[in-house]
Length: 424
Image 1: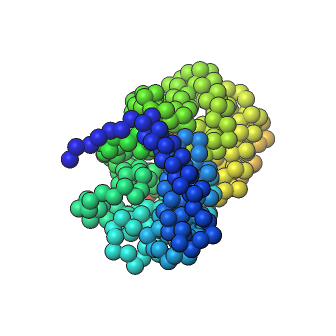
Image 2: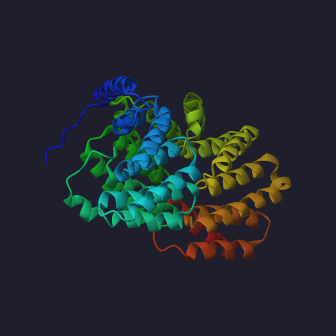
Image 3: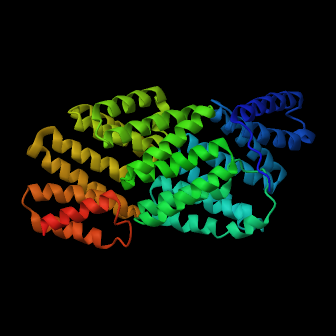
């Protein structure tokens, strides 16, 4: 099979031309005539696609998908109902409305139940897994991501249909890596990342490869403490976004580069990069992909002595996450807030910091996010060590550490082991 890579500028030009022609065609149809319902449904779906993947027009896709769904239900067209429900689900992801996205995902899954098409069945599990992952239910997300991957053999035998813009297996794999990582399966997650990069390259689709690097490879390498890999993946993403005009991913890559600079020891330089790029992102900085840089910004501000600004950043981010039910990063934000409170007034803030750590532990345990649980248990154990509560510290951290079966070369597990040895 020969893969033809179409440059992103040409893709976007074709999307723009498609949108203009579809809009003219829709304007020529009598909206009140029953005979025009089917062509209006088909054209509305095409318009939604072109808006969803055009530059700066994503938010306009929702109404077009809603029109598609209304007409598909009137015509009892199951295929277009599925397309519209999928589009509305993705639209809610783009707008940060995760509860609404989950509702559309459930409607899609209910409709797809009777389908014999493996694409429909795989996508039902795929979008359910994505919604549940962002909401913070990693146990259920893992169940559905494995359900999606169960169809990959059947999918490979089918002729590919250009119905879903992103390659399904590629996008399923980077969400699989994220879920595995949060659940504490670091080695498995990193193996998925390595495979995902290769398949992302093979697909040759610009936006897909941005997500492969930005959703999976870069964050997981960073959280693992593998700064060489994090730098390598970031350089790949920066180079990719220089050759393809994907503004938000380019901003994200620069933010990520600032995070790595801080970890390498350049606090002032990295903080300046991180703060500057997030300011350029504007309201887009509250999209799911920017949560990790926002949390790191708050932590870096604390290290730089700007504790009040760090607390303001983390509190603002928590407000946005709570308003949207975006729970996947909530435990880490609470942990970062606890660390900032300790810097704010020393021992006087310890009870409040401990409340944050306990809240983070509770969230992580409810979500099945063992990685956040370990990180928070380490922070709380350090606090208790300073308070001479050595037995409590040792018992807490030892219980969490003992549940890990892999990933012992990662930074957090090595830090936890070192602390346990000190406590012993």
